Length: 77
Image (cartoon, rainbow, N blue to C red; front, top):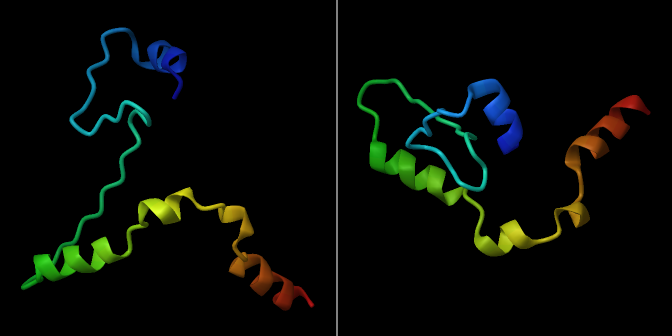
């Protein structure tokens, strides 16, 4: 939300959460795993491998092929 919207909906005295981001505000995503004998280190390592590098974040994503559109076009033929 823009600062003006946030003040309108949440008021002037809104307390920021520990997850508050100055650029993105209250955008938070949490992933929870519940299970027995789960290997936390392996799960964290595997998830961290999926993160984009700074170079990947900065690239022009519009130049990449859209596999969903291609698949959709195949289906409707």
